[in-house]
Length: 265
Ligand code: SF4
Image 1 (cartoon, protein in one colour):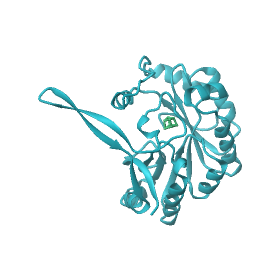
Image 2: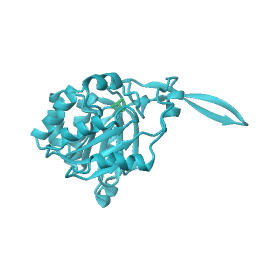
Image 3: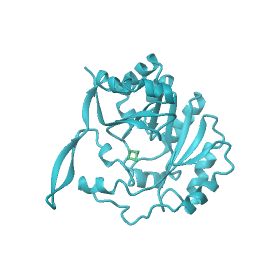
């Protein structure tokens, strides 16, 4: 029986698409962004992560395994348990990660099951996959949450480990095929948030009819502890989160887009 490697399933999400959603987190990602908020999502295999607990004032560590192989039936049962909430809130299920397209066969089966049961589907993707994979899932995906990070190919490769031409090609493919897309830009101070990069992203998305909204996702410190628990050095230790004023300034860059622009999604 086919299984997928899943590292989390969260119900009642309100930031991963319309309504109240169940988000399925696939493990494995072809990118390695230095700001990644889910470092435990990157490897396409189960892995150990420490948890620090305190007892009688003393800290001790427990090792837990992140990522579990789960069957289609098992995952779909979780999705199905939330159908009445989806119906009431006009929500659905979001496949996220990691990168869900890395396990495209498993994803496709879940998407087809959702379509069969009339459940709204969103795929949250970094865009780095083959056109064939996009072609397979396109007919069963109601919404793509599509990340655009850096327009400079050299910077994209430096900060994510992969070039960006495949990602841009896939975005244009979604345009040609009338997909419904929300573009998401992770705002990382000093890396993705300079005016040159943001203006270049704006120039890419402005003519695209498929892009219905732009979400700006501001950097935060919440993943710091995960890096410690995984014994990985955290290169962004020194970076301060945004002030509201700076976020408002950044949002102004996109003022002339004819689509809604949100901070935080
Ligand atoms: S694409 Fe997302 S999940 Fe993958 S490394 Fe980058 S931030 Fe992490």
